[in-house]
Image (cartoon, rainbow, N blue to C red; front, top):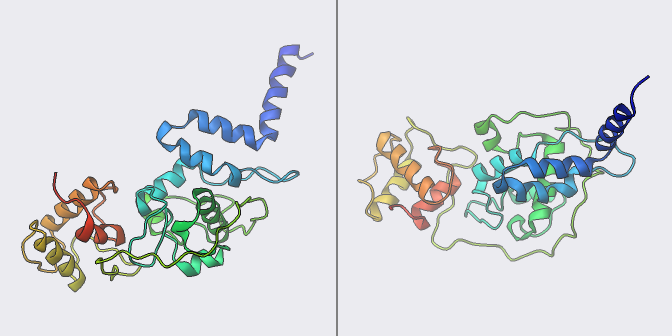
Length: 243
């Protein structure tokens, strides 16, 4: 016959299994302090409605990695290329998940929750950084199940945010990488030349450009991955470029 200790252990394990709140609380306790904020903000979106089943959504650390790549974890960022906030929503996508106003004007909790809705609808497909980071989808990706995601009260529409003096990123969804040639790369190089950092642009993304891009990213809190995307493009006009 099993001992009383066995029943005590089984009861505790079963209670944890039945409590998504407890699972999230334990995950926060074990997470690195730097990403705990992301886990907390996802708490509401990670807890299912009464009577539901536990979900398998990405961890808080995974979302943190995505935000760092997309926006340096800046919920208020406006890159000047019609993508806003920590998850770099464009307005049509933001509207498709129920958002109003501008994503970077919404609270952190709302941006987190609407990113989770998008993930449940389309998986990692909307985020280029998910491919860069090698993120994998789980059972909730593309499930369409959003009834258990609890949203804060949405704010009112905000005026269009602008970034004076910074031209819109011309690459669209394409980020420039080492070995490419483009008139847009030359424009980026020429802007850095105006600031005294770089020779006149050639349009070729070679080793000197790679060093410059990584230095810009490092000095301004981005992941120094060498990709010339909208955030790095913006830094050629407004970012710190030397120690």
